[in-house]
Amino acid sequence: MPDLVLNEAEPTYGMLRKQFLKEHRSARYHYLLLTGKLNEHLNQTDQEAREQVEMLMKQMAEKKDVTEELKVQDQMKWVGLMNNIKVSAEEIILKNMVYV
Image (cartoon, rainbow, N blue to C red; front, side):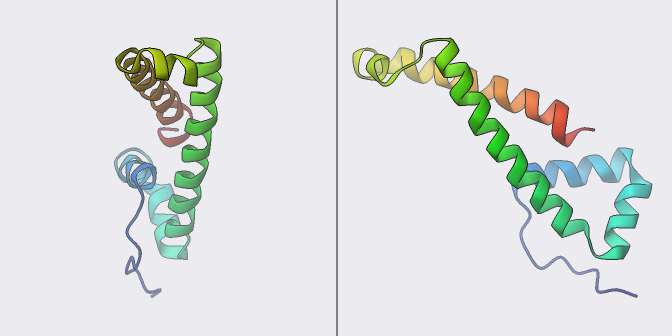
């Protein structure tokens, strides 16, 4: 039997991916677990998801004209817009990368 102990704390998107695999793709989850590739898969998913969220946030901020100038002029508006952009980007990534 392979060593099934998880040594590293799993990152946020990785933890969500793990939960999804356990609940909805149990065969894939058990395959990754038994072959010792689960941590690698979860870490890769987390890294790719974080990069995609960052990229989407930059694109959305440019499209909605959320700039550093706005941040200086009206900080509360900037924070509100950036929070909305972050939530939107995370929803897209969860739907397209984590929950598939």
